[in-house]
Amino acid sequence: MFYETEVKSFIRIPPSEIKKNIQETMLEKLRSNFESFVSQELGFVISIKNITDIGEGIIIPEDGAAYYETSFKIITYKPELQEVTLGKITDITNFGAFINIGPIEGMIHISQTMDDFVSFSKAGVLQGKDSKRAVKKGDKCRARIIAVSYKDLANPKIGITMRQPHLGPLSYIEEDLKKSKKEKKEE
Image 1: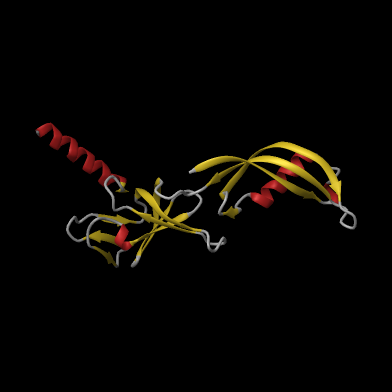
Image 2: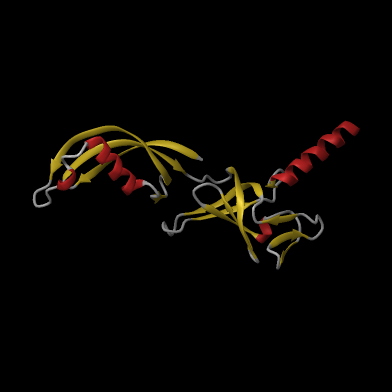
């Protein structure tokens, strides 16, 4: 889920940059400090939206830099358990698939790709034994987030499933919906 959040922090402006436009300098520092930042509380910081307030600068002895208490709005992506998301398959392996869901890739274990016995082919495709349906690189899919781990902030893990109804490659979802409508008309 994407969020707009207001954050407050002290931002250090080095002496060499104090004479520059404070608004532009502050925005530059905020971008370098916070964009691509990951935390369990905020999720993934996508961008700095705007600065809402810059307080009075405080100079710390022996540092020479000014520190400004600054309030600013950020756009974040925080994956939520049970969230249904759209994404694109970026890689297929013998143990599952990886799906890009925005600022991060999630992993779909082979057992979570579809409601069927799934095998991996050397052509880089996961194929269902009975349904003959396949998941391949480049497929646009709807999936559900089932696990989120921030144990390693440098490499957060997102677990994903496509086993429930109306999840999986969009082409198969459309086929199922058309088939369902046709069956209802025949009743």
